[in-house]
Image (tube, rainbow over the protein chains, first blue to last red):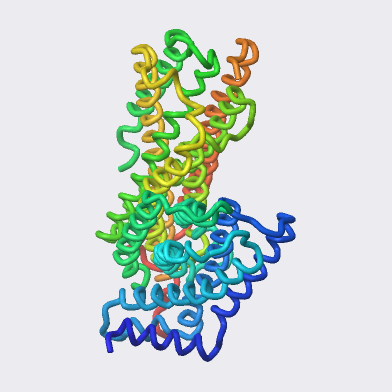
Amino acid sequence: MSPARALLAKDLRAELRARQSVPAMALFSVTAFVIFHFGLDRATIEGDLASGVLWVTVLLAALLGINRLFVAEEEEGGFDGFLLAPVDRTAMLVAKAAALLLYLLLVELVAIPAFALLLLGPGLGQALPELLAVVLLVDVGIAAVGTLVAALAVHARARELLVPLLALPLLLPVLIGAARATTPLLLATGAEPVPGRWLGVLGLYDMVFGLLAYALFDFLLED
Amino acid sequence: MYGRGLRPLSIATVLALIGAFSLVFFYAPNDADQGFVQKIFYVHVPMAIVALGGFVFGAIMAIQHLRTGDRRYDMRSYVAIHLSIILGLGVLVTGSIWARASWGHWWVWDEPTLVSFLIVFLLFSCYQPLRFSIEDPERQARYASVFAITAGAFVPLNFLAVRLAQAYTHPRVLGTTGGDMPGSMRVTFLLSLVAMALLFTTLGKYEMASKHAGQQLRALRARLAAQATAR
Amino acid sequence: MPALPLDEAGKYVAAAYLVFLALVLLYVAIMASKLSRIERELGELSELADRSPAPGEPAREEQPVA
């Protein structure tokens, strides 16, 4: 089994047993929708407002997952053990990013139907395939940047404060792309196709930061 | 040595600044639309360009630091980013003043460059908190470099995304008469830009010389202390 | 919004340039405090060097073995 796959399997097993990140992120999303209902004082939302609420919620939920990503390694000495092994260090990056991606997809599996149920005016039916494409592009971007930020913050004091401060500005293009791309899908007058440029922006972001994270991760693990 | 060449550089900076500001107030014509208020352009935009250049320079120095392990690159990266943050604050404040004077509000979301700049500023403001929250000095330098490179790569993507997001909403608010600047304005702007870049370089060298002196001092102190205890 | 009259506009332009000046002077002030700290530390170090004997001189603690 490749080292990345082995690490990923270990992380997923740990998550399955402890059930920490994913349920918390999912619960947070649903709670956030309730908060938005009361904060905005609306029964249903659509169009750009709906798009914004959905993606801001996903982004904030992602922060919860990013915060916890390397905590187990740092607390239990997993970094040292990993460094002693004769494997390519970026294997840890790939494993952690894949884990975060998986967590996000699972959370969205709960959050998007909850959103459709609680807040969304128009139905999701015909918009679903394009929405899934946007979701995938967004999650890859969050996974790449989130893993990098998590690794940067893990050795710092006040880690939980630093992660949102670093991650939110960096993820802003993702939010912009996601929100603008999803707006036509959630219109009350019926879903319209997604403007290609936003998919392009998301794709470009994923590529640039994916490569960057891959190149820089080594330097974070040296000791 | 960092102090070398600092005096002629400072003199050149002073001359360039005085020259530029003289041109601004005595030579450049008033803008047809915005009137006298447009003069803010000559201090706001050069600061923005130099600050962004500083961030990119900091990122490049960070790359060199990671590649060679030479701590001097890290110091250059730190100083460049630190200066750019200060300039960035100036960009946001002067931008706000300009917005208030020409549009009536202290902040406008319609100006994509200013908004992008705010985001970049917020991001780089995390550079120093990140550095000072990591105790081990070698690790601190390495992690700071990784962050500087990430943030540097972020700058163009951010400007692209924000510019695209605003494309259909409002026309540019803070600009000059259309796209064609009369020659006199162009000359004034270029000199202001050169002056700002010289100022950045001078202050940067100044800070690096001071930091370097401080480091040498600490090393000297350590050596003297070691000698004293060795007897 | 139509262009502001000169006396109004002047205040805003002056404010902007003053912000620039203030930032530069703030920076100079920060550097000045760093410089005075270096000066103080240098003073302490030269005191330290004066007090301890120069290397090569016999140490005062050496005692012949009785």
